[in-house]
Length: 334
Image (cartoon, rainbow, N blue to C red; front, side, top):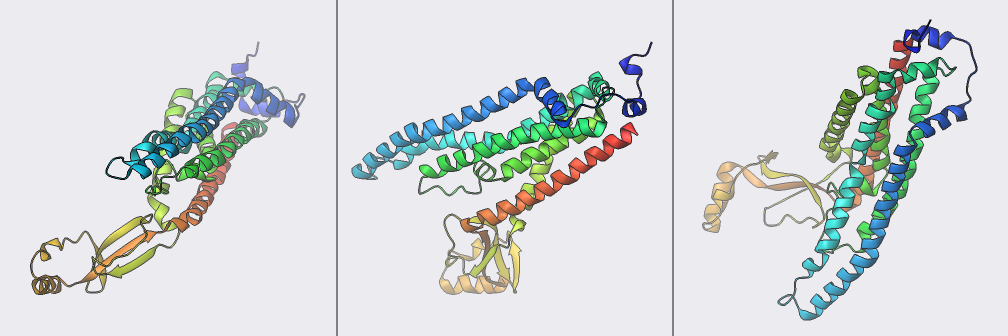
């Protein structure tokens, strides 16, 4: 008697039999993972509803309180207090939106792929006329469509909430809560997490270890890309005396330092030259070879160029990792 566990990958792939259509395979994935689909849809709806509520209700109250403060004057009322509850909530939703890809990686590595390889469900599917390649394609395509739809719906709602009641003193356009969650990079990271989870599960073939490694690998990728983010678009560099450096208040400062003999030197402490007479200060700076200060920054207008380049980089990684997943599956089942 031959059991499912005794069927080799070669026999599973080569055995003739009815071959379910593409929609049938996709429908099977939806049926097996309908609980995750419901949770994902509920999360997206809850976050969108929360953003609408705080923008229309809390934001309205914050605007009214700020107007009262403006009439009372800065000595009697601080307008920043009126925005605290609203901005903190939006920041937390932005962080959650930005790092939803970690949850996608955990699910892809654990329940979506890893659990089925560990339990033998994948091998059983291959004996029912579903080739390994078609099985993996359905496993990736269906969640990819669901994740893309959810993230695409969430991003514009967050952009609207983030800008609707923006505190004029707040310029956190490159902060962790506002950078990814306001553009298509959110979708790109989620798709990349899905691919990384699949490769990790195919390598480890056990659900829980694959879950942990998928999250760690995707988080590491996000960290590395964040370190390279400033180089995705040419920055602006200005040079002047320390007192005359003029740059926008909303600028993302990438680097600063002193100009020493025509070279840019970071972290040069020349503050000891100040405090005396103008002549002694200049003489001290001349002795150190300091000719001025420089500052490299990205203005807020660079948000979209940087964001779109990062999106392209992450999508390229996604394509490469997805191809690696199919190559690895073919090697394992050849």
